[in-house]
Length: 167
Image (tube, rainbow, N blue to C red; front, side, top):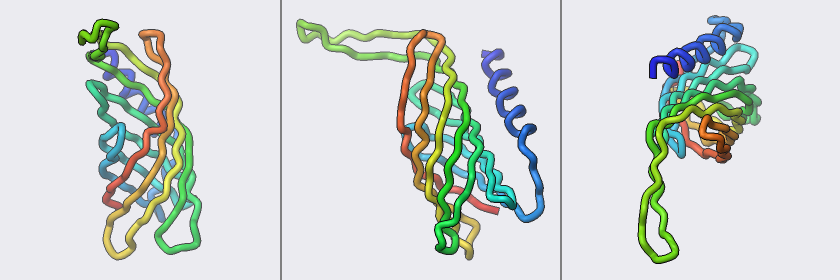
């Protein structure tokens, strides 16, 4: 477990350090991402409308860390922007149970122990930042493809809703 924690920390530090952060004329958003992968989200948006986002997500006995590089595009309406981007993820699944019906109608379960997963992510979203209050709401798709140490792969469109404080 300590190795997994170190991998996740190194992943986040590397992504954040590789991004040129300028504190002037920028803003930060911290909040929740609700959806198939629900968790905490942190986003820094630069004056050039580029952003870096880190999501610490929880999913069915799993912990997942995703880091995305994003670009904001104005819609022409005040406070409403499109954004898109790409990134990577690393996650750990502790236990996984499948309940299956066999040919005789009997239920049984299949249990898999913990394993690591690594993947690539996309992002497409629409965000409303309310100018009068420090609040942002977003609707997004975060499709990802993942391969894990069990030897299987996985794809999910991962739709979500973001609720964030913006300052």
